Image 1 (cartoon, rainbow over the protein chains, first blue to last red):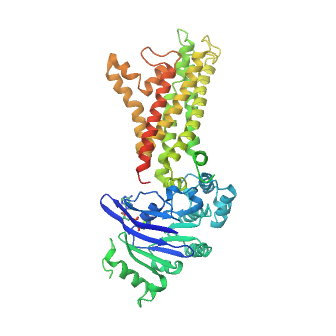
Image 2: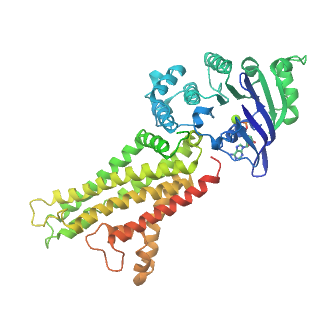
Amino acid sequence: MIELRELTKRYGGRVAVDGLSVRVQPGVVTGFLGPNGSGKSTTMRMILGLDAPDQGEALIGGVRYQDLGWPLKTVGALLDAGAFHPGRSARAHLSALAASNDIPGSRVEQVLRVVGLSDAATRRAGTYSLGMRQRLGVAVALLGDPGVLLLDEPVNGLDPEGIRWIRDLLRGLAAEGRTVFVSSHLIAEMALTADRLVVIGRGRLLAETTVAELAAGGDSLEDAFFRLTSEATDYRGVGAS
Amino acid sequence: MNRYGFRQAARMERIKLGSVRSTWWLAIAAVVSMAAAGAGVGLGYRSHTPVATAAQILNNSLGGAIVAQLLLGALGVLMVTGEYGSGMIRSTFAAVPRRRTVLAAKVAVCGGAALTVGLVASFAGYLGGQLAIRGTAIPAAALTDPAILRAVVLTGVYLGATALIGVGIGAIVRHSGAAIGTLFGLMFVPMIVAGLFGESGIQVGRFVPLLMLLNSIAVTSPVPGLFAGWGSALLMCGYAAAAVLCGGVLLRHRDA
Ligand SMILES: Nc1ncnc2c1ncn2[C@@H]1O[C@H](COP(=O)(O)OP(=O)(O)O)[C@@H](O)[C@H]1O
Ligand SMILES: [Mg+2]
C-alpha cells in the first residue's frame, strides 16, 4: 500500500503538489489522473525519494522509500521514458540495476523476455524507438518482482498493441494482489485500465473515486473529467468549453 | 542480509562503467597519448647534442600526462554527469536511495579503474621514451632505480586522483560540459595565476596540480621549493577528497 500524507512540493514559490493525502490499495489498478502540469510526475518522484517534499510524507507499507532494505524488490517504478544512459545496452542497464539489489542475472533475461526486448538486448538503448524505451522502463519496474508498481504515463508513445499489452500487464499484476499506481492525462485510457481513480489538478486532490462512479454521473467520462478539472487546469486551448 | 550496501552499489557501478563506450575510448586515449608523447620525446632527443641524460628523457617522456589527466578527469566527470544528463541518475537513486553509498561506490570503482589506467599510461610513456632512444648513446633509465620508479608510479597516482577530482566536480556541477570546463579551468588557470607572482610564484605553485605534475611528481628529482613527489601526490589525493566531500554534501539535499 502507498500512503501519501499532506504531501507538498514547491518549486521556487510555485506549488506543484499541494497537501495531497491519498491511500493506494493493493489488488486493484489505481489510476492517477490529471491534466498536464498537475503534479503527477512530481508526486511519483517524491514517493521514490528522488525529490524531497516540503511538507508531508509518502510511505510504502508504512516505510519511507529511503528506508527500504531492497528498494527494487519492494517498489518497481517506470519514470518518464529515458531514465537510462543512451550508450548502454538494455541488458547492461538491467544487469547494473539488478546487481544493486542482489537480483540474479537470470531475472534480467526473464524480464527482457516479458517485455519482448530479448532480441534487441545488446543494442544501445539510445537507438530504441519510444515504444521500446517504454518497454525497457517496464522491464526495470518488473526487475525485482515488487509488490508495489509505480508507472508514470506508461502508454505515452506506445502503439495500440503496446497500449493493450500494458493494460493487460497492469491488470494481471493487480490481480496477483500487487499495488499498481499508474498516472495518465487520458481519461479514456484510464477508464479501460484502472479500477479506482485519484484525480488531481494543480497539485490538489479533486476526487478519489471509481471509474463506475464517475461514469454514473450521467455525462460522458470525458465530460465528467473536464467538469472535475476545469477549475484546476493551468493551460487550456482557446475554444475548449 | 536484509539490505543493500556498498558492495551491491559498487557492483552496479562497475557494470555501468564498463558498459559505455566512452570509458574505453578515454582509457585507450590516455594510454596512447602518453605512449606517443614518450616516443616523440625519445625520438626528438636521439640526435640531440649534447647527449641527453636519463633524467631528461624520463621527465619529458612523462609529459603526456598533461593530456592524460584531462582524459581521465573527463572519465570521472562523466561517471556522474552522464547520469544526470540522461536521467539515469533517477534509476540509480531509485535502486540505491542512500546517495552517499552511490557516491562512495563511484569513487571506489572510478578510483580503481583510473589508477590502473593511469599506471599503465604512465608506464607506457616511460616505455615509449626508452624504446625510442634504443641504440643511442643516451643512458637508459631503469625502473630498478627508485627515483625512476617513483616518478612513474606517482604519475599514475596523480592521474587516478585527477579522475576522482572529476567525480567530485561532476557531483557538484552535474552538467557534463560545465563540469569538464570547470575541471580544465582548475587545471590550467591556477598555473597561469602562479606565473603572475613571478619570483615568489613557487610558494603558490607548489599547490598547483599541473606544476606539481611537471616539476615534482613526474620528474626524477623535484624542482627546489616544491614538495617532494609523494607529498605532491598526497596533496592531489587531498584535493580529490575535498571535491568528493563537497559533492557528497550537496548530493544529499538536492532533488535528483
Ligand atoms: N524540477 C522542477 N523545477 C521546477 N518546476 C517543476 C519541476 N518539476 C515540475 N515542475 C512544475 O511543477 C508542476 C507539476 O509538474 P509535473 O509533476 O511534471 O506534472 P504532470 O506530471 O502532472 O504533468 C508544473 O507546473 C511543472 O512546471
Ligand atoms: Mg508528468
